[in-house]
Length: 387
Figure 1 (cartoon, rainbow, N blue to C red):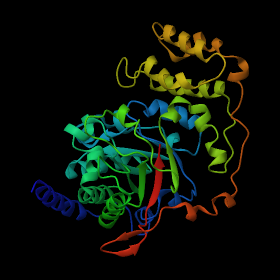
Figure 2: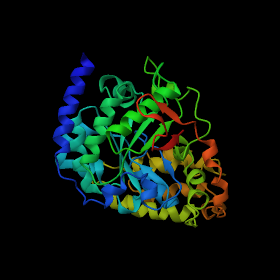
Figure 3: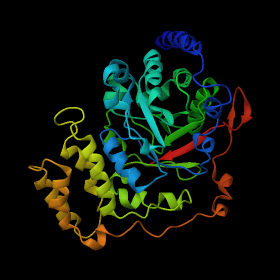
């Protein structure tokens, strides 16, 4: 009965939002949204950094973009209600430098009206895609908030939500989910989830975390211990904590090895100089200590992962952060821990992927899904595997 009431409310909300005129002329960006977003932009292969709460903020994304020009970046999840109730302070949650394109906004929520309103407000910031969080197992999200991974129990609502989101933006939309939740983790159930969402909305891109979510008493950290279950068959790749814990090596070869484009050839010293310019421009923008030096330094702490001097650098960073007031003074006091050979070494040798390497991709994809309503069919969706 609760589901029926929720579905009725969802239908009413979708009806309201679907009456709004499209934000783009027919055949323009909205027409392209039926295609996978990367193909609509002429990109044949995709490598993206996962949305991570407390990690993929503006500061990290600025560093990531200085290393890779083409990797797709995702924001932290922003709750729809936060956007709706912070209309006078939206820049704090949604603004980003133009250099961060291509970038995806991930939103979370379970109220159709607020998801639609939040998307309409976010549309002015020109994100390249809007993504709905259907995969977070956190109790704060999936429990009290009743969204995140818990939404996979209600694919009808997710379809309505994606329809409302798409009606209020002029960019492609996507869903980030799990392979399953609790005991609902079969391949057929995942296909049914995708099928229902696709049938009710223009969603054609699904980022699927390679683990099921266990909502019965497991924390997000404990959920990460669940065995990964996707071994092959994804069209794209999304990387999570490894891209934060080792940004230089994880992002440094993406442009050449994934996109077949030249790397930036910048050294870590040059990247830090550029990052300092960014830090100086934004420090204290939202108050005396928002952001502060510690917040700006946070994404830099893994830049020398596994390199000579890394341990000393982190120890000096810890002590220096207790008294330094500027990013410039922090770097001056700590970088002598890193050898010049490391600071001045450019990103590694460029490598190009031949198209022949992808010639047999179709043979790796999962079998076609047989729908009880549609007969034998292949769901027209792009799948990105998330680690």
